[in-house]
Image (cartoon, rainbow, N blue to C red; front, side, top):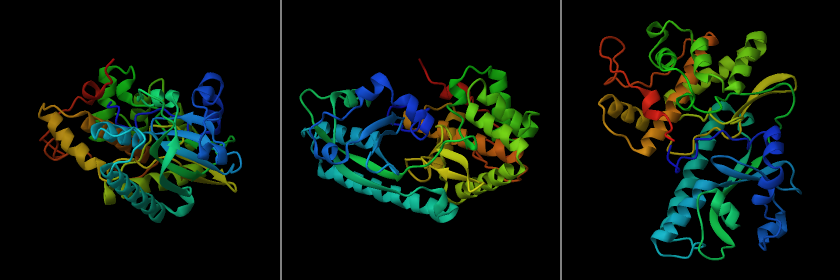
Length: 365
């Protein structure tokens, strides 16, 4: 997957358990800002929590109800633009400023759209800013960047988000914990499960639950645990069915996918004894209609044409979302499904071109 893609991750940035594990020892010191001479550090004293595929996350001791998430891709894009324009690393060119202003506008629109459709209680309060932020050589190295000289600060997008309480036994995650294409799944098993979830169970003989479990393989423990709990808890099952149907309808309305890869991007928990869910970090960070680009790329694959790294990322994340939704919908007794396979590839009957997603999307060593 391209290094520009922020959503290929198995991150721990949203969970208290992940926070504790990720912030220990060498990793904490690697991202530590305590000795950095910067106004933000002096005022807020940020403490490192975790690094995921999209964010570096810090707590603010005097504001324990929020976390600060530094958007890695924004920092990289600005640094790349500065190099292209032969500017200092800590500069902000007019082009980068316009790009980031547009990015913030689009992100705000997506966030407000999710809150309006699903309900504000399901999307923790958040605000994103373009700021000059402290940086260290260690952090630059961690995000795949470097500086030839001393660099104390860079421009980047920072999100201040209400901290979600994700501890306790009544807490699950709607997460595949990675991609089936990057697991050691026998080709025949992968093909049958993917056919079931993308084309229909009549093409594989598997149920949605069976297909999902096959693709999770030895990984995907979070989704396995959620499925097992829903089998035993009728109220959890009702809430989960409502969530999955809303995600499918929202996809049909907007083309927007949600990130079901990282742990607790979509967190399931009880509040006041009632099952609910939170979109902690689930809104896909690229264009709103990623699925349209993914469909176009699938047509290219069916024609044996090459696709770009960006298109590969879009297909990988889109089919992971679609398979998860279709499998859960069948398991939960919903009639709703997503059809992501374009008519040029499959017309639902005889016109059929098989796409070997496992071979195409497998991460190369």
